[in-house]
Image (cartoon, rainbow, N blue to C red; front, top):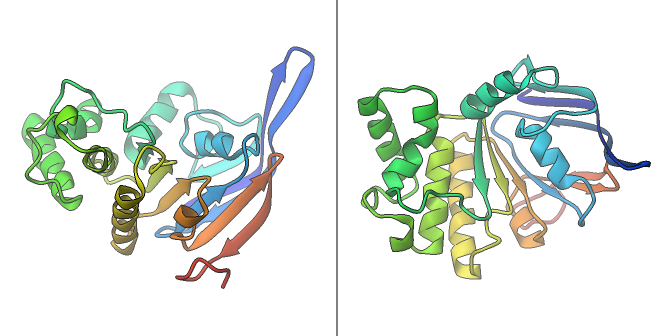
Length: 232
């Protein structure tokens, strides 16, 4: 099992008010699985994404990622996990505007202290994997929205992470480009990558093998879906 989450809780205190963003979540994700997380605003899906991505720590409960208990790690250890185990894809791309596509993809390898020669080779291979092998010298403003998101996906993949975590990855894209990015996700999953996509769009979630729906900090639906997007 790649991810095992048990009785996970995240409580925020706003003055005297206690907000249970997550309230006892249990979740398991296999290596190679394609999971969509859905829920209305305030349901806890963003909090769950932040915890899975080691961007935040739980108030209580256990989170085991790739056989390592990450719920007890300090900030430095969490940063190490984020850089080696998790690839992030964000709605806003988060690319450096004055850097080339190749340089943007290299960033995680710089943090990992990879040699210049190796990181450039691996960044080029990642760009080729997403169909942008000939765009390495282009800056983000010379690329379309879909191409910028592909660069972001290449950057997420360059460290060969255990999990690819995407937060509303098509939110800034038109419908045709969104379909192209989701086709890319399908290909990555078929190639063995584990995908967790947080989305509010039913057609995006329908691409996954499994949909988890949250409400008021709890999982209320956990269903496998078929190719048509209907529960199987």
